[in-house]
Length: 203
Image (tube, rainbow, N blue to C red; front, side, top):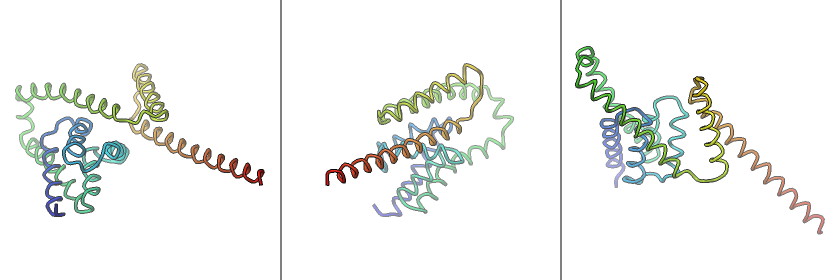
């Protein structure tokens, strides 16, 4: 496939996601995973998990950050530009049209009823995406410990009615990851020094 065709495919894929997905970034995760991993096979599951982590930990909406990342990953700078535009155009257009008829739009009972149904569906979409990511997460001790600590912390703060921004969980998780990496480096150097000392003693 030529690069121009690939860029066009990126644009229309993001346009479709932006046009037909309700509920914001978290609700889009399941659709993003289906499009990028299962259908288009642009990235694998591990890269998708990394993409979600990067998109969530950087400023801006997660869906737009993900579109920029996957666009660059697939087709470089122009791919990221086109993918971001494709993701943004539907929401900008819809919000602009709604703003023209805002009061009349909100007064429609049919619209209010539709949004109540959408809200219920969005909860399932977010839960389904989270469970799918949990299932695909590597079951190693460190990720399981971080996951367990996060769940316990969120439940505790919720029961105590303490509001904690999601960014703090991300920052703490990142700090724990860096700490684990540094400890593994220290352990590897320590083992290397011990092996060197043993070899020196044998000589």
